[in-house]
Amino acid sequence: MRRMNKSSISVLLFLCLIAAAVSGGCAGKSEEYPGGQGADGRKSGITAPAGSEVITALSQQEKKGTEAEPVIEEVDYSAYFEGLNGAAVIYDPSENRYQIYNQETALTQRSPCSTFKIISSLIGLENGIIVPEDSVRPWSGEIFWNEDWNRDIGFEDAFRTSCVWYFRQVIDEIGTELMQEELDRLQYGNRDISDWEGRQNTNDDNRALTGFWIESSLRISPKEQTEVMERIFGSDSEYSKGTQDKLKEVMLVSGQSEPGLAVYGKTGQGAEGNTTVDCWFTGFADQGESRIYYCVYLGRTNGADLSAVKAREIALQILADY
Image (cartoon, rainbow, N blue to C red; front, side, top):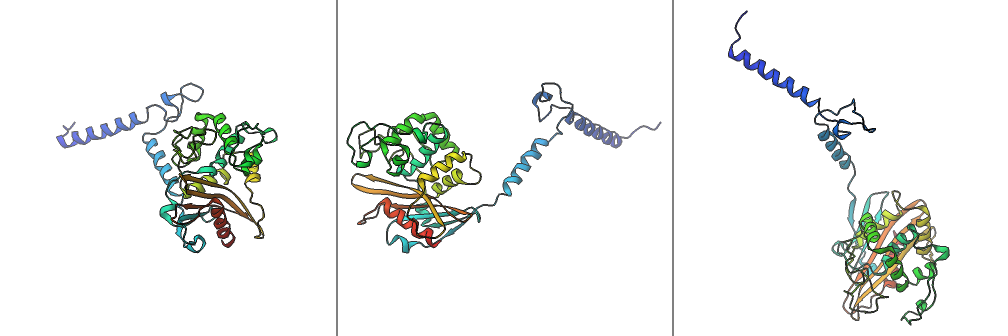
């Protein structure tokens, strides 16, 4: 038998090392069930090949890569705003397209004010805190600036009159833990409910009329408002049909003159001192089988009289022309 030279020995050792590595890589623990056990706790006869975790990670990245980024189109809606500082966002999921007027303002987070009643209603309805047929809450007898609030009031009227004391009670019953969970689930703005009672709001020291959603810790941008509306009312919504239908009922804008167009929304308005600084109208609109999500925001404008009513008026004009 011929003696192997050093070169042959090196090759043989290299091949042995490869064989050992392959054998060891296939004899490890199951990647599907840690510890090499099956779902029933017994040893699994199926093991994942070495490197399968890398393949899985790559396939997840590829899946994410197939989700097209939305198109963002900057539009000129200045004629609707007539010199008022503000922004407008329309999201059309059928085209995965945003139309945005005044992008800097559209991406700036501000207090949601009474548009947040959509969220507190959603959570209250979904969790049985608001039961529409048994939703009347007794008035304390305190005289509020809005005469519509000075009475026993039920959910529908409280939503339409934007009754703060009613929703202050609803939110307190929802509680901090559930509220935070739901805002995280909705990816709602900065999700900050730290000023639960609304003490940052210096316009009012009546805790029946303040909260984290009124010129306080919670903030959201106009673009984020449309994204949240789509998470609630879109095809992938995680909320029940009953909750969505009840919200649609109270959000429906009456007196629409545009044929076939149904607009759903909620106003919001906030002030700093005697100056109105935040005005909103946000929601969605249906025309035939098509649904779009929208938000109009008006901000502080020197010498101008701002109101949520004006924001709603602008939104309805834009939607009618869309």
